[in-house]
Length: 329
Image (cartoon, rainbow, N blue to C red; front, side, top):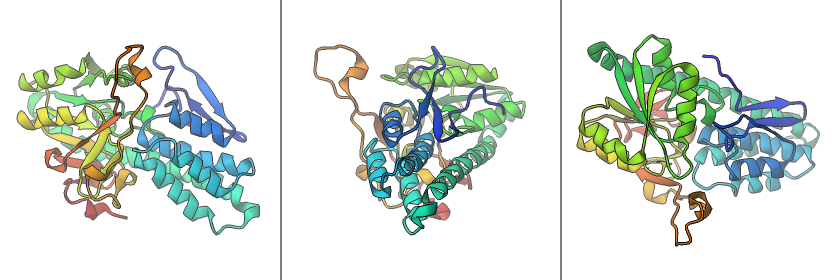
C-alpha cells in the first residue's frame, strides 16, 4: 500500500519524524539533529508505537555519535525515555552489539547503517504480519460476507516504520478485496484511536469510532468477529502489555467467545521477562487528563494474560501465546 506520509526518514545528517502529537488536526514534521532531540521525541510521544520507538532510538544513537558523544551515553539517555516498550531496549541492545567493538573512525557510518537496517527490517516484518493475519480474517469474510474487527489504540503504520502491526492484517484484507469494518476505540486519555480512524479513512476502510466503554456491549451484541491489538512488550510466557484498556477488551472477548489476537514482531517479545507481573508499567503525567485538581493515576499500559489470547501474529506466523519459544531467535 502507499502511505500518505512517512513516519521516519533521513535528511542529510538529520532524521525527520512525523510529529504525532499534532495529528490528526495538522501535519507537522520535526527535524532531529541531536541525541537530546531524539530522546525528547520519544519521551513526549512525537513518535509512538513500540516498533517506531525502536527505530527512532536506533537513529538517536547515530545522532549521538555524530555529535561526538560516547556510545554508552547515547544508549543510556535513550533507554531512560520510556520503560514499557521493549522495542526501545531491543534496538539499543542491537546497536550496542553492532558498535561496541568497532573502530572509532568508522563507528558513525556503521551506526547509520545499522539504524537503516532496523527500520528496513521493521517494515518487512510488519508486511509479513499482515499476510499471516489475513488468514484469520479470510474465513470469517467468506462465511459472513464481511468481517468485523475491533482494535484498541493505534497500531497502524503511524506506530511503525511501515504497514503497522494490528492494522496490517486489516490493510491486507482490504487490498485483497474483503469487506472489512473496524470498531475503533477512542483510547483515553491520549485518544490514539483518532489516529487509527484517520489512518483507516486515508485508505477508504469502513470504520466506526466508539467510546472505550462501548466495547463490551458490541461484543455482547455479536457485532465483533475478532479483536486484534498491538503490543508494547510480550513476556516469555505470552502475557502482553499494551495500551491501558486492552485487558478489559480481552476479558469481554473471552466472556463472549470472540477471538482476541495480538499482532507484533518478534522484537517485541522479551524472552528475558518471565511473565506479565515483571513488565514495568509506565505512569504518565496527570496533565494528560487536563486540569482536574484532584489526585490522578495514569498508567499508560495494562497486561493481558496469555490465557486470554488466541494467538500472537508475528512475522513468522501465528503462534499460541504459550508457545513463544517457537519463534525465539
